[in-house]
Length: 370
Image 1 (cartoon, helix red, strand yellow):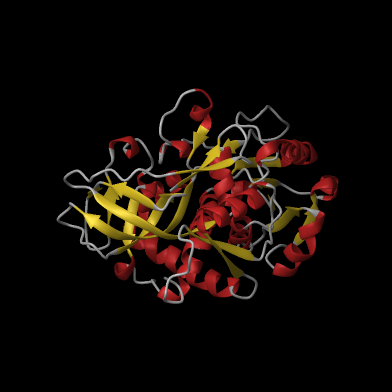
Image 2 (cartoon, rainbow, N blue to C red):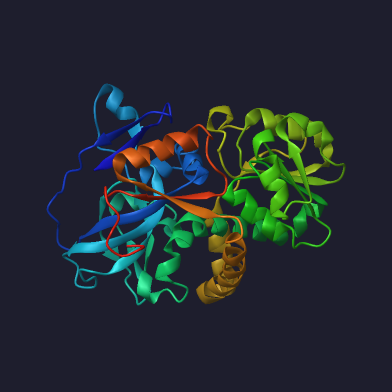
Protein backbone atom coordinates (compact mmCIF):
# COMPACT_ATOMS: atom_id res chain seq x y z
CA UNK A 1 0.00 0.00 0.00
CA UNK A 2 1.39 3.38 -1.09
CA UNK A 3 -0.12 6.76 -0.29
CA UNK A 4 0.70 9.21 -3.05
CA UNK A 5 0.34 12.98 -3.22
CA UNK A 6 -0.38 15.07 -6.31
CA UNK A 7 2.77 17.11 -6.88
CA UNK A 8 0.73 19.89 -8.52
CA UNK A 9 -1.91 20.09 -5.77
CA UNK A 10 -0.78 18.82 -2.38
CA UNK A 11 -4.37 18.59 -1.16
CA UNK A 12 -4.99 15.57 -3.41
CA UNK A 13 -3.99 12.07 -2.30
CA UNK A 14 -4.62 8.55 -3.49
CA UNK A 15 -3.98 5.03 -2.23
CA UNK A 16 -2.21 2.65 -4.61
CA UNK A 17 -2.04 -1.08 -4.02
CA UNK A 18 1.60 -1.94 -3.48
CA UNK A 19 3.39 -4.59 -5.53
CA UNK A 20 5.56 -7.03 -3.58
CA UNK A 21 8.42 -7.90 -5.91
CA UNK A 22 10.62 -10.90 -5.14
CA UNK A 23 13.85 -9.83 -3.47
CA UNK A 24 17.09 -9.88 -5.41
CA UNK A 25 20.30 -11.06 -3.79
CA UNK A 26 21.43 -8.46 -1.25
CA UNK A 27 18.01 -6.86 -0.81
CA UNK A 28 15.90 -6.60 2.35
CA UNK A 29 12.18 -6.03 2.83
CA UNK A 30 11.19 -3.62 5.60
CA UNK A 31 7.67 -3.48 7.02
CA UNK A 32 6.97 0.14 7.87
CA UNK A 33 5.50 0.03 11.36
CA UNK A 34 5.11 3.66 12.40
CA UNK A 35 6.03 7.14 11.20
CA UNK A 36 5.22 10.74 12.02
CA UNK A 37 3.62 13.44 9.91
CA UNK A 38 4.12 17.16 10.47
CA UNK A 39 4.33 20.42 8.55
CA UNK A 40 7.94 19.43 7.87
CA UNK A 41 6.65 16.77 5.48
CA UNK A 42 4.57 19.41 3.73
CA UNK A 43 7.84 21.31 3.27
CA UNK A 44 9.39 18.20 1.71
CA UNK A 45 6.55 18.16 -0.82
CA UNK A 46 6.58 21.94 -1.39
CA UNK A 47 10.31 21.88 -2.18
CA UNK A 48 10.23 18.38 -3.63
CA UNK A 49 11.35 19.38 -7.10
CA UNK A 50 13.87 22.04 -6.07
CA UNK A 51 15.58 19.86 -3.44
CA UNK A 52 14.88 16.41 -4.97
CA UNK A 53 12.73 15.06 -2.13
CA UNK A 54 10.44 13.37 -4.67
CA UNK A 55 13.40 11.34 -5.94
CA UNK A 56 13.95 9.29 -2.77
CA UNK A 57 10.88 7.11 -3.29
CA UNK A 58 9.63 7.69 -6.84
CA UNK A 59 6.09 6.68 -7.63
CA UNK A 60 5.61 4.04 -10.31
CA UNK A 61 5.85 5.64 -13.76
CA UNK A 62 2.58 6.25 -15.51
CA UNK A 63 1.03 8.09 -18.42
CA UNK A 64 -0.77 11.41 -18.43
CA UNK A 65 -2.12 12.42 -15.04
CA UNK A 66 -0.24 9.57 -13.30
CA UNK A 67 3.04 11.40 -13.92
CA UNK A 68 2.10 14.08 -11.38
CA UNK A 69 1.94 11.75 -8.35
CA UNK A 70 4.74 11.26 -5.84
CA UNK A 71 5.56 9.70 -2.47
CA UNK A 72 6.44 12.05 0.37
CA UNK A 73 9.33 11.00 2.64
CA UNK A 74 8.67 10.48 6.36
CA UNK A 75 10.74 9.47 9.39
CA UNK A 76 9.81 6.32 11.25
CA UNK A 77 10.55 2.77 12.37
CA UNK A 78 10.37 -0.43 10.35
CA UNK A 79 11.10 -4.11 10.94
CA UNK A 80 13.00 -6.51 8.71
CA UNK A 81 10.51 -9.12 7.53
CA UNK A 82 12.53 -10.75 4.72
CA UNK A 83 16.22 -10.66 3.97
CA UNK A 84 18.61 -11.80 1.25
CA UNK A 85 21.45 -9.87 2.87
CA UNK A 86 23.83 -11.79 5.13
CA UNK A 87 24.45 -8.69 7.27
CA UNK A 88 20.82 -8.05 8.15
CA UNK A 89 18.67 -10.62 9.92
CA UNK A 90 14.89 -10.83 9.99
CA UNK A 91 13.44 -9.18 13.10
CA UNK A 92 15.79 -6.21 13.39
CA UNK A 93 14.14 -2.85 13.96
CA UNK A 94 15.49 0.19 12.13
CA UNK A 95 14.93 3.94 12.22
CA UNK A 96 15.17 6.12 9.14
CA UNK A 97 13.61 7.64 6.04
CA UNK A 98 10.60 5.91 4.47
CA UNK A 99 7.77 6.64 2.05
CA UNK A 100 4.15 6.83 3.20
CA UNK A 101 3.81 3.11 2.51
CA UNK A 102 3.50 -0.14 4.38
CA UNK A 103 6.85 -1.51 3.17
CA UNK A 104 10.13 -0.59 1.54
CA UNK A 105 12.77 -2.70 -0.22
CA UNK A 106 16.34 -1.56 0.44
CA UNK A 107 19.82 -2.64 -0.62
CA UNK A 108 21.90 -2.51 2.57
CA UNK A 109 25.57 -1.59 2.31
CA UNK A 110 28.25 -0.07 4.51
CA UNK A 111 26.84 -2.11 7.38
CA UNK A 112 28.30 -1.61 10.84
CA UNK A 113 27.20 -2.14 14.42
CA UNK A 114 25.04 0.98 14.28
CA UNK A 115 23.18 0.48 11.03
CA UNK A 116 23.51 0.54 7.25
CA UNK A 117 23.13 2.71 4.16
CA UNK A 118 20.63 2.00 1.39
CA UNK A 119 22.76 1.65 -1.75
CA UNK A 120 19.84 1.56 -4.19
CA UNK A 121 21.08 3.19 -7.40
CA UNK A 122 18.40 5.88 -7.54
CA UNK A 123 19.36 7.10 -4.05
CA UNK A 124 23.09 7.41 -4.78
CA UNK A 125 22.88 11.10 -5.84
CA UNK A 126 20.95 12.01 -2.67
CA UNK A 127 22.40 13.38 0.56
CA UNK A 128 23.88 10.46 2.50
CA UNK A 129 22.26 11.63 5.75
CA UNK A 130 18.88 10.59 4.34
CA UNK A 131 20.07 7.15 3.17
CA UNK A 132 21.36 5.96 6.55
CA UNK A 133 19.27 3.57 8.69
CA UNK A 134 20.11 2.93 12.33
CA UNK A 135 19.43 -0.19 14.39
CA UNK A 136 17.09 0.65 17.24
CA UNK A 137 18.94 -1.50 19.78
CA UNK A 138 22.29 0.03 18.81
CA UNK A 139 21.14 3.60 19.42
CA UNK A 140 22.37 4.61 22.91
CA UNK A 141 19.46 7.04 23.21
CA UNK A 142 16.80 4.53 22.13
CA UNK A 143 13.88 4.08 24.50
CA UNK A 144 10.95 2.01 23.22
CA UNK A 145 8.62 4.07 25.40
CA UNK A 146 9.75 7.27 23.65
CA UNK A 147 9.62 6.16 20.02
CA UNK A 148 6.94 8.76 19.40
CA UNK A 149 9.35 11.50 20.47
CA UNK A 150 12.02 10.09 18.19
CA UNK A 151 9.88 10.12 15.05
CA UNK A 152 7.66 13.15 15.69
CA UNK A 153 10.21 15.53 17.20
CA UNK A 154 13.78 14.40 16.62
CA UNK A 155 14.05 14.88 12.82
CA UNK A 156 12.60 18.37 13.21
CA UNK A 157 14.85 19.16 16.16
CA UNK A 158 17.88 17.96 14.21
CA UNK A 159 17.07 20.62 11.61
CA UNK A 160 16.51 23.14 14.42
CA UNK A 161 19.88 22.25 15.94
CA UNK A 162 21.57 22.75 12.58
CA UNK A 163 19.83 26.08 11.96
CA UNK A 164 21.12 27.37 15.29
CA UNK A 165 24.57 25.89 14.67
CA UNK A 166 24.74 27.51 11.22
CA UNK A 167 23.76 30.87 12.67
CA UNK A 168 26.35 30.54 15.44
CA UNK A 169 28.96 29.29 12.99
CA UNK A 170 28.54 32.61 11.19
CA UNK A 171 28.66 34.72 14.38
CA UNK A 172 24.93 35.37 13.99
CA UNK A 173 25.85 37.40 10.89
CA UNK A 174 26.25 40.30 13.29
CA UNK A 175 22.50 40.32 13.98
CA UNK A 176 20.72 41.18 17.21
CA UNK A 177 17.32 39.87 16.06
CA UNK A 178 16.23 36.51 14.67
CA UNK A 179 12.75 36.48 13.13
CA UNK A 180 11.29 32.96 12.83
CA UNK A 181 8.16 32.37 10.74
CA UNK A 182 5.66 29.55 11.23
CA UNK A 183 6.56 29.99 14.89
CA UNK A 184 4.11 27.33 16.08
CA UNK A 185 5.72 24.61 13.94
CA UNK A 186 7.96 22.17 15.74
CA UNK A 187 11.01 23.02 13.62
CA UNK A 188 10.54 26.69 14.49
CA UNK A 189 10.04 25.93 18.18
CA UNK A 190 13.25 23.90 18.29
CA UNK A 191 15.19 26.60 16.46
CA UNK A 192 13.82 29.30 18.74
CA UNK A 193 14.68 27.26 21.83
CA UNK A 194 18.29 26.89 20.64
CA UNK A 195 18.69 30.45 19.36
CA UNK A 196 17.33 31.86 22.61
CA UNK A 197 20.51 30.63 24.31
CA UNK A 198 22.68 32.93 22.18
CA UNK A 199 23.68 36.02 24.10
CA UNK A 200 22.57 39.28 22.55
CA UNK A 201 20.11 37.67 20.11
CA UNK A 202 16.42 38.49 20.45
CA UNK A 203 14.15 35.77 19.00
CA UNK A 204 10.86 36.92 17.44
CA UNK A 205 8.11 34.49 16.46
CA UNK A 206 5.87 35.22 13.46
CA UNK A 207 2.59 33.33 13.64
CA UNK A 208 -1.13 33.40 12.96
CA UNK A 209 -3.62 35.05 15.28
CA UNK A 210 -5.05 31.65 16.21
CA UNK A 211 -1.67 30.32 17.36
CA UNK A 212 -0.41 33.47 19.06
CA UNK A 213 -1.33 32.45 22.62
CA UNK A 214 0.28 29.02 22.24
CA UNK A 215 3.49 30.47 20.79
CA UNK A 216 3.72 33.17 23.46
CA UNK A 217 3.20 30.59 26.20
CA UNK A 218 6.15 28.45 25.12
CA UNK A 219 8.66 30.88 26.60
CA UNK A 220 11.29 30.45 23.87
CA UNK A 221 10.33 33.61 21.95
CA UNK A 222 11.12 37.06 23.29
CA UNK A 223 8.26 38.57 21.30
CA UNK A 224 5.41 37.19 19.20
CA UNK A 225 4.09 39.09 16.16
CA UNK A 226 1.17 38.18 13.92
CA UNK A 227 1.65 37.87 10.16
CA UNK A 228 -0.54 40.87 9.47
CA UNK A 229 1.51 43.09 11.77
CA UNK A 230 5.04 42.71 10.35
CA UNK A 231 5.56 46.47 10.68
CA UNK A 232 5.58 45.94 14.46
CA UNK A 233 8.78 43.85 14.33
CA UNK A 234 11.45 45.51 16.51
CA UNK A 235 14.29 47.55 15.08
CA UNK A 236 17.76 46.06 14.78
CA UNK A 237 20.11 44.07 12.59
CA UNK A 238 18.10 40.98 11.69
CA UNK A 239 18.22 37.50 10.23
CA UNK A 240 15.11 35.77 8.90
CA UNK A 241 14.52 32.05 9.47
CA UNK A 242 11.75 31.36 6.98
CA UNK A 243 9.94 28.14 7.85
CA UNK A 244 6.57 29.25 6.46
CA UNK A 245 7.90 29.72 2.93
CA UNK A 246 5.22 32.36 2.37
CA UNK A 247 6.48 34.68 -0.37
CA UNK A 248 4.20 37.52 0.76
CA UNK A 249 5.39 37.35 4.37
CA UNK A 250 9.00 37.04 3.23
CA UNK A 251 8.65 40.17 1.11
CA UNK A 252 7.10 42.04 4.04
CA UNK A 253 9.93 41.06 6.39
CA UNK A 254 12.52 42.07 3.81
CA UNK A 255 10.77 45.38 3.27
CA UNK A 256 10.56 45.97 7.03
CA UNK A 257 14.29 45.56 7.60
CA UNK A 258 15.69 46.40 4.15
CA UNK A 259 19.46 46.82 4.49
CA UNK A 260 19.34 45.73 8.15
CA UNK A 261 18.35 42.20 7.06
CA UNK A 262 21.77 40.55 6.86
CA UNK A 263 20.74 36.94 6.21
CA UNK A 264 17.54 35.29 4.97
CA UNK A 265 17.29 31.50 4.99
CA UNK A 266 14.46 29.49 3.45
CA UNK A 267 14.00 26.40 5.60
CA UNK A 268 10.46 25.19 4.99
CA UNK A 269 7.23 25.59 3.08
CA UNK A 270 4.47 25.15 5.64
CA UNK A 271 2.53 27.82 3.71
CA UNK A 272 3.01 25.70 0.60
CA UNK A 273 0.49 27.57 -1.51
CA UNK A 274 2.28 30.90 -0.96
CA UNK A 275 5.88 29.91 -1.52
CA UNK A 276 8.19 30.75 -4.40
CA UNK A 277 10.86 28.19 -5.28
CA UNK A 278 12.95 30.81 -7.08
CA UNK A 279 13.29 33.69 -4.59
CA UNK A 280 12.48 37.04 -6.19
CA UNK A 281 14.86 39.95 -5.63
CA UNK A 282 13.87 41.84 -2.49
CA UNK A 283 15.26 44.44 -0.13
CA UNK A 284 17.94 43.12 2.18
CA UNK A 285 19.94 39.91 1.88
CA UNK A 286 19.08 37.57 -0.98
CA UNK A 287 17.02 34.61 0.31
CA UNK A 288 18.92 31.31 0.17
CA UNK A 289 17.85 27.73 0.84
CA UNK A 290 19.15 26.20 4.05
CA UNK A 291 20.04 22.58 3.22
CA UNK A 292 20.63 20.74 6.49
CA UNK A 293 22.84 17.95 5.05
CA UNK A 294 25.42 20.56 4.03
CA UNK A 295 25.84 21.66 7.66
CA UNK A 296 25.83 18.01 8.79
CA UNK A 297 28.70 17.23 6.41
CA UNK A 298 30.65 20.29 7.56
CA UNK A 299 30.33 19.53 11.25
CA UNK A 300 30.93 15.80 10.84
CA UNK A 301 34.20 16.64 9.11
CA UNK A 302 35.17 19.11 11.83
CA UNK A 303 33.91 17.26 14.89
CA UNK A 304 33.85 13.66 13.70
CA UNK A 305 30.71 11.50 13.85
CA UNK A 306 31.07 10.89 17.59
CA UNK A 307 31.56 14.58 18.30
CA UNK A 308 28.54 15.47 16.22
CA UNK A 309 26.38 12.85 17.91
CA UNK A 310 27.51 13.93 21.38
CA UNK A 311 26.61 17.58 20.81
CA UNK A 312 23.31 16.74 19.17
CA UNK A 313 22.48 14.14 21.80
CA UNK A 314 22.97 16.53 24.70
CA UNK A 315 20.84 19.21 23.06
CA UNK A 316 18.15 16.69 22.09
CA UNK A 317 17.86 15.25 25.59
CA UNK A 318 17.29 18.69 27.09
CA UNK A 319 14.83 19.68 24.37
CA UNK A 320 12.78 16.47 24.38
CA UNK A 321 12.28 16.63 28.15
CA UNK A 322 11.19 20.26 27.85
CA UNK A 323 8.84 19.34 24.99
CA UNK A 324 7.01 17.00 27.35
CA UNK A 325 5.57 20.13 28.97
CA UNK A 326 3.52 21.00 25.89
CA UNK A 327 3.38 18.15 23.36
CA UNK A 328 0.96 15.23 23.16
CA UNK A 329 0.68 12.44 20.60
CA UNK A 330 -2.27 11.68 18.35
CA UNK A 331 -2.23 8.27 16.64
CA UNK A 332 -3.84 7.78 13.23
CA UNK A 333 -4.41 4.31 11.76
CA UNK A 334 -4.54 2.91 8.23
CA UNK A 335 -4.55 4.65 4.89
CA UNK A 336 -7.69 6.67 5.68
CA UNK A 337 -6.19 8.01 8.90
CA UNK A 338 -2.93 8.92 7.16
CA UNK A 339 -4.71 10.66 4.28
CA UNK A 340 -6.86 12.63 6.73
CA UNK A 341 -3.78 13.73 8.68
CA UNK A 342 -2.00 14.81 5.51
CA UNK A 343 -4.97 16.91 4.38
CA UNK A 344 -5.17 18.58 7.79
CA UNK A 345 -1.48 19.45 7.65
CA UNK A 346 -1.73 20.83 4.13
CA UNK A 347 -4.73 22.95 5.19
CA UNK A 348 -2.85 24.06 8.33
CA UNK A 349 -5.88 23.00 10.37
CA UNK A 350 -3.89 21.21 13.06
CA UNK A 351 -3.28 21.36 16.77
CA UNK A 352 0.25 22.75 17.24
CA UNK A 353 0.63 20.77 20.47
CA UNK A 354 0.04 17.45 18.68
CA UNK A 355 2.61 15.04 17.34
CA UNK A 356 0.84 13.01 14.65
CA UNK A 357 1.79 9.33 14.78
CA UNK A 358 0.76 7.26 11.74
CA UNK A 359 0.55 3.50 11.44
CA UNK A 360 -0.12 1.94 8.02
CA UNK A 361 -1.83 -1.01 9.74
CA UNK A 362 -5.52 -0.61 10.55
CA UNK A 363 -5.06 -1.80 14.13
CA UNK A 364 -2.71 -0.96 16.96
CA UNK A 365 -0.06 -3.59 17.70
CA UNK A 366 -0.42 -5.75 20.80
CA UNK A 367 2.22 -3.86 22.80
CA UNK A 368 1.64 -0.24 23.79
CA UNK A 369 4.02 1.27 21.23
CA UNK A 370 4.67 -1.46 18.68
